[in-house]
Image (cartoon, rainbow over all chains, first blue to last red; front, side):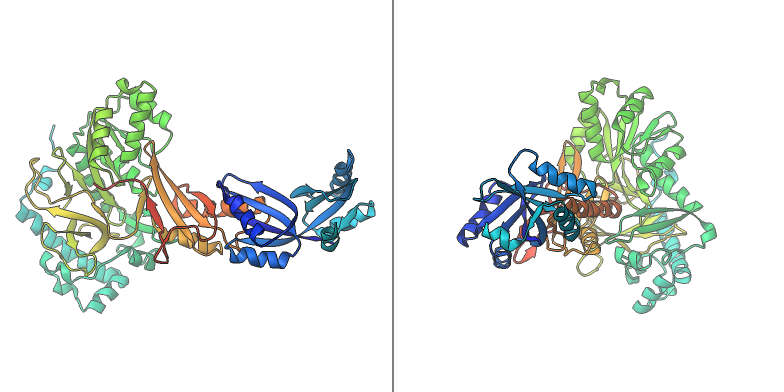
Length: 143
Length: 434
């Protein structure tokens, strides 16, 4: 029950992200979710795309260093306190969140969050027990 | 007040110096052959016996020693005196992980400190002087060498060691230091900081003895003007003794080699052939009085020219020019020897390919070193924390290896300048050789 995230190393320089999106554009790669982490020297682009394997190959050929990481994608009600509920559950079980980012879909009333946790299976189980919906890659792409 | 520390040696006749050198060389070759199997092997391989060496004229027959030999023989393989006679080590960086370790007997220390004392007296030092030593104390030869020399002269010695500029300035002003010993770049930095803090008119310095890194004539003029002193160069290397192998006199026209202890040769770095007098080439030293670590024909990799003309100061010893460059890729950063191969070793140790570039800069008289490392799949992670941890592991191992902090910047793959397929490993933005 995980989604496949592609993480890509970028230099923290003007034009670096634009050069990257140009490669995506030229290859008609559609992003469902995206986040960019920054440090003084470099950035990491994290994204979820249609075809992870193909995208990875294209990016490698273009000279990028990347990794594919299974992450948790969670559907939450798009209301105040929606995210808090999920985080409270994780807190109770002392599950650390390394990073998280949000994305949306056409579906009204729902928001989506990606979580990077140490143990996806354990977190999925805990969330499911509390009635939080964890969605898999296929479900995510169908949104 | 004499202008020499040991006039009978510093101003001895050329004939006398030659006689000392011949006798002492023969003795040293025997010492090495008998006590150092590593060097005996090298001599045997070359088919040279100690009996073949009767004077300096036979010196060319002897095998060279290099930093590679020091690494090979690490730690005790080139020690020529029994442990019971050795009282100290000093150390400098090697080309890769292993450091160079040099041994000293009581006599060796005494000899080395006298060499430094000659340099201090040549810079005008007397018993009345207050000598501020801000070279690092410890394994680095700079601090303890000048410290010992200052004691021998009888000057009041301030064992400051390096760093803590505020305290350096306070002691310099309050104790009215008259002679400053440090790297030339630190002298420049001190001068500017004293000026900025309005302390410059409290400075009573008359001379500075600066070494451990290359410096230009322009830097000398800047330092002399700013601090109102005369700036003297001092040269040395741990393998041979430390600072004081050669030193400048008031003529500031070449560094007098302490020839009663060291024989200098100039060779072609490519062929190893000894070059005629006045040629530019690689400087090679043979220690002729040392007991614990008397290296023979040690290749310094410093490029310079020797001058046999008599000096106006009255000293008769051979003079060498300031090093005019290097015959290898060694850099001196903050007075510390840095080899690109050390960076390579660290990256390989950490399990990464050695795709790196070293960028050396000097801003506000302070050297800085940046290591750009190309990101690879092995180093990459989706987590900033993990990448930062890996980056810090590289920084820490580099610090251990180099002895100085190097900033690490992770750059994109294949971004390091390559010419004809070969990556350019070093970019030195400082302009250190005239």
